[in-house]
Each structure stands twice: as structure tokens, then as C-alpha cells.
Image (cartoon, rainbow, N blue to C red; front, top):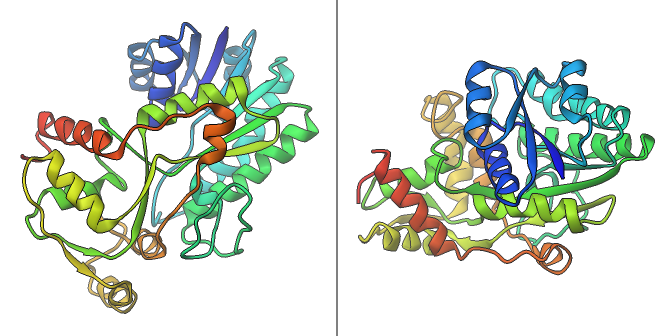
Length: 325
């Protein structure tokens, strides 16, 4: 079996390549730079130079492949210019599907996001939860529109399309984005946090879900991939146990965040150049609870316990000098 992976030099794409290679699959990975090509090679794949807008590169990478994994995407909160995000996460999704059809690939697995579900606050969401029509961030909107473009184009091109919708993907190798929240909690004895619910999936489980979707996923279906949904107090306690020390958070009610957000933004305490920006705060205040039972029953997923994920994260952060025990 031969597969083509876009975004193979990234956090999720790299894990997908390593898992595929470890499963005995030959992998080609799209690489838009020398650094990306070196990363793809290090992950065990064969780099194909080019980017998502390079039709020739897509055709070269996909020719003779059985499955395409479209992992590449822009994952940014509070972008100064959201235009490039929409181009990559929406417009170029169609280009990938068309290239797959041109080269005879029959199945494409899209890395979507749980953010594309768009559930009401307080709801335990699954794949069929109706979207509210409101978006917490440009990222969430771009993933929702990108997923719709993916299934629409796949139907037009007679491609077998399956989407994987991970919740917050965490694990060794990630130090930015939402991982900054974990680093913040680990860096203080009494971190100030908002009372909310987090949904987290281990990076290894995310990679496994992609191969499972390619093998067992039903055409036209999306699969929520989430290992655990926990309250912030429980999450911080698990982090403390993983770091072998007590962390006693100051937990603020959500209404404090609603009131403080515009003040903090005006004062420059949150923003594009800060660890926390308005879109991330809005997402945190909304909270997340997901039902991943469909991925268990149809894909055969078995999820890593969250405390084990946190232990691996802390060990990696300590080794990298990004936190202390």
C-alpha cells in the first residue's frame, strides 16, 4: 500500500506519517521547503517538493497511491489576516480532491476538526449535532467550510471521502497553540484559570484514527476523535500528578472571563502576540464535550488515558527545558 500525506512536516501530519510507516505502508509527503523535506524524511516518508497550489506536485505525489491523507492546514487563533487561512483550509481542499480524482486515487481522508461541529454551549456533541450557525473563531469557520467543500467536491469527483475530527490534539512535540495553556498551568503553583471543560486527544491516537478511517471509515462520514472531556480542575490535578507536585489553581467562573475579555483586550493583555487571544478565550469560555463513540464502534478506536498523555507531555517539556518538575 502506498499513501500520500499533505502537511507531513507538521505536528499531526508527522505523527500520521510515522504511524503509517510503522504499519508497513510506503508514504510520500508533500514538502514545500528543504526543512519540511528533511522532516518528512526523518519521519520515514519520501518527500515530494511543492505546495498545495502546485498541481504538478500533487499529481506526482498521488500517482499510484491507494489513499491520500490531507492533513495540511492553517491552525491559528486571532490571525491578523485570515485570508491565507481560508485559502488553505477551504479553497485548496478542492484542489487536493481534484488531484486525487485525476490520478485515480479512490479514497481521501481529511483532517478536519471538532471545531467544525459548532455545537451549542453545554452540549455533549457528536457527529450529528446541528451546527448553531455561529463561529467562535476564524479557524472554526474555516474548518467548517473546508469540510463542506471536501465532501461536495468528493461527491462531484466520485471520490470516497472520510473526515477525521480531532478535539484538542496534545502530546510530545507540541509546545504552542493550546499547549501553551498546559505550560502555563505547569509553570505556576497557583495558576488562574476559567472554569470550563476541555476535550483532549493524544497525538498517537489521532494518527491511529487516520489509518483506521482509511481502512474502516464509511464513505461520506465524519468521525469525532476525542480521548477525554474533563473539567479544568481535574485537568490541572492530572498535570500536577504528572509533574509530581501539587498545583492549586484559582478557578474563576466563566462570567468573569466574559466581563474581563474586552478590558484585557483593550489593555493589550490578550491579543495576536500573546499566548491567549480573544478567539482562544472565547473558545475556552464555550467549553468542549464530545462523544467519540462512533469512532470506537466503527473505527475500532481505543483511547489513551488522559493521565498517561499528560505524563508523556510533562516528560517531553522537561527534556526540552520548557518546564520544570
